[in-house]
Amino acid sequence: MKKIDMHGHLGYWPFALPNCGTADSLVRLCERYDIERLAASSSLALNYDMEAGNAEMAEAAREHERLLMYAYVNPNFIARSCAEMDRYLPEEFAVGCKIHTSYSATPTSAPRMHELVAEIAGRTSLVKVHPGDAADLGQWARAYPDLNIIVAHSFGSNYPAAVELAVAHPNIYLDFCCSHAGRGKVRYALERCGAGQIVFGSDMDLLDPAFTMAVFVGANLSDEERRAVYYDNGARLLGILPTGG
Amino acid sequence: MAGIIDMVTSFGIDRTRESDLGLDSLLSVLGEHEVERAYTCSLHAVWYTGPQGNDETLRACEAHEVLRPAAVLDPRRYFDQQDEARRCFDRGCSVFRFFPHQQGWPFEFLPFIKICETLAELGARAIVPASAYGEATRVAHLLAHLELPVLLIGGGYANIGELMAVLAEFPTMHCDAHVQDGPFALEGLMERGGEDRVIFGSNSPEREFLAPLLMARHAELTDEQRRGYLHDNALAFLGEGAA
Image 1: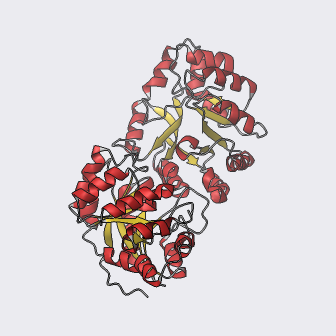
Image 2: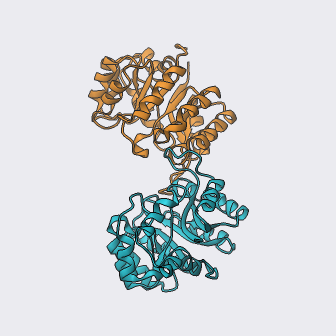
Image 3: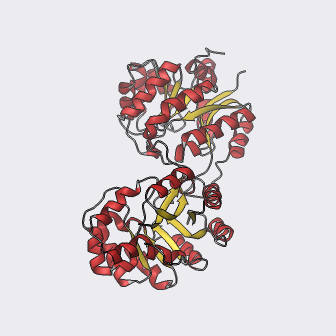
């Protein structure tokens, strides 16, 4: 089944991951798992150099139609982050922003993080947040109803808190990729917030998409749920016509 | 009079704050203090990926005569790090740095030990942090089977006693003193650890170059000991003999 993957990264990680880290390795995984589009951010930008990483990501997205870009922004550098958004978000391949609390050493509660999210909300309708505090995400969801917020990893083993957020806020979306494949969490979410706010995100090529697909396969999705999660919800967020099947 | 050899510098970006850790900043500090030679590494290799960062280091060293490479190896990426060590060594890099605190791996990490075995085979040198209690001891014991000169860096007044003991016990171990701010620290390290095994490092441009330098200038050392600390001990550590 065709998929839209809302959580990927271009670049290297400091782990023993042979044959990973390039646009080619992402495309190869997309082909293997029938992923039509992958929205990704640069691991160089997260780990070290925001501007150089975003430039690499943009170059890859220009070269490979399958790859879409989250512009990575860093609350430690608000002005430079705004410049990055203004540089890339007008591009067709740029679909939103990515923020990361631990790599930027900035919790979601920090004033500078709130300032950055206000800047994001003024420029795009999609942000993916590597989690922080549920109260802050809820505050952003209320303050910026036109901003769709993907909660990367859905707080891991604390997924009930993420599900509660999604129930309370229609612009909160859940992505369940995780380094441990918790059994039952997708069904738990489906029963409470429905399939409309769950997206497929793999975290490739840090993780193999099969690992995350397993939590969806294990949830015994109906055809309708599968189509929503694997394709239609991501398509709606990206402004792609829902043609999955 | 020989100049200063600085074994501990770096350049690059701090992703968590506005800072000036760039190459120009480092070169400015080195020029201001007439440093003869500084071993350096790109922080790109610490925080992102070794090969690209090490290439940046090698390019900087090719462009600036004062700089010498200290390639960064990351044991978390074990599968390609021995090849990376050989690649950098073949390009003239004989000093290698490790960053376990920033990268989050323990010294008892078999990939670290295996990589150090490769460095010993190559005839290289290693720079390893030892700032917390027990770290210098652990590194010394873990690498005791190797003919690998090691520079333990970042120790302060808290673990100076441990450094004295480690240097006295393990002839391959050396230490820097850029965080040694206790009274008579240099004198004590040289007296009890070995006057030929305390080596100057500044951790510029992040840290103030003058801090360890003024400590050296004011320490009650002979001219020979002071020259050893600032210059000759580094040459011996590097296998080049004293100037």
